[in-house]
Image (cartoon, rainbow, N blue to C red; front, side, top):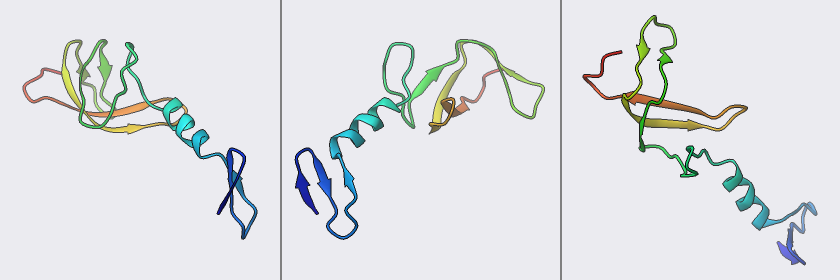
Length: 89
């Protein structure tokens, strides 16, 4: 691997990439809350609107506390959360 201006080049296949661009793209794909804080696995959140539970007739009410178990970056950001025990759904 060698450097050509800002890019790194693989001598075997001639593939070129910019290592700083990867970091910029990763930061752009980060999931953030309304205040711009980065959301990660293990963060605690408060539900701000009623959410239907997939595959059930119950609803998670406004104000319920939850812990983020998984963050999925796809077409729409998805968060898998575990609601704290004792919260009425």
